[in-house]
Image 1: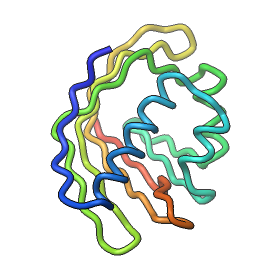
Image 2: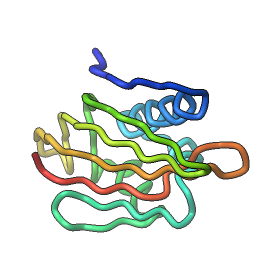
Image 3: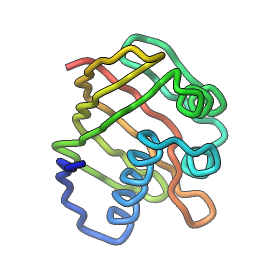
Image 4: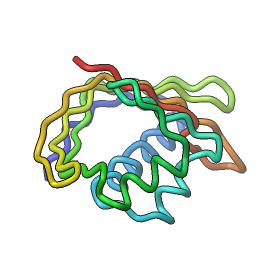
Length: 131
């Protein structure tokens, strides 16, 4: 799978956040409960472009069960800015999906909020809007 990924990481925190974003992308394509749970904060607020809102448990369960099934995910125009223990990531997401065995395509603008927790970056919030 080709990855369309643009990010200008200017310091180590930005590089670490970029790495965590990539780990999340891979975990959403090939879901593993332990990996997903390790990438997100307990108080995760995950907003979908259609208005649905997931918490950590729902987010992980939907991916692991296949209810939300990403076949491929590509990010473009990614920016990362870090302020203390908070990082803001924005990118465009293009994905092929197979939710509940129904093929689809999505194009979204994404806002991710990452928080540094015990030396590691974890996803605290995400909001998607349709392009």
